[in-house]
Image (tube, rainbow, N blue to C red):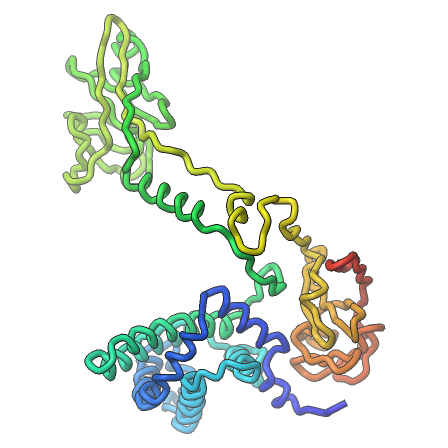
Length: 452
């Protein structure tokens, strides 16, 4: 077994970093042409890296919450440490601008992300996730400015393509840098996307958008009985539910009014509020409206919807406009009906995996992955085609074994290099002393499951 120092292990990054990078690149639609545009503008971006780094650290030093990381105990700036961080930052962006997004690069990014937390080489370091996100956003703006300044008048098409490439790439990097802060409730299984027919989704999105704007294929007015005249003689008002709406109907000084019973502020029952001098006051937060127009006193351009009232005999009716549309209904059969690789029948779609299951093809020999079984995280390993499972937490200080390196049947903890035999859970090398809990893995065709 090759012995590695703790520092060397940290610099390797997580074992699945390459797969994670490729998966997220596919998810955000980071295409080869995006990488090519980044590569084509490499030297333009590199020229601006010193200025970008300078701007970024000036930003960090201007905020007390981030400046503290660069101060000595006496409050002075630790210039040596600041210079070191600048060097690492410049190296990171210079390497990224080269657009070589291979396994080594992905593990390098993963290492950089971990270096901001206690899972890095220095357990005393912790930089909140929001500042890592802020760094990516800050650099994104500066790279965009650099490309625009250099290429806008020379090659605007290349500038546009490079900006698109950087924007997509930085979304991938943001996820890779921040995932150490929390892997989520379910471990990623790296299932490939499936071709679908997008037309039903586009129709549904258009219908939803038009509906939100009040647009309709046609408008139909429906008449609703609000009650009898006698019901209004005592209180002068009544709140009814009609066509999915709550509506307040008023009889004041012989005149009828009907307003939607939903305050424009927070949806409060405005029509149940006090009515004085023709002004209706919402009981929740005091927003006031003119009863006869529905206007908000603070902003006359904002109005409660009003409805026509008609009295016939002793009956009171409302006229409510209803949007009439052709409903869009989609199903899995629709989505896969015209896809290149999927027949229409829903029965042939890949079945959904339970939390304790994984696809055999997703875990190749020499790899490990994490699953959640009965609210516990379990590490699963492929040793020459045979699957084994143990607790994911190292028995030393809970390091994530599923992110460690495998050598044969040995898993190496990524935190402090404890070694375990995954087939038995036995400790092979400290500092861990306690063995791992082991679990049974059952293979059924192309799916396997872990049993507690």
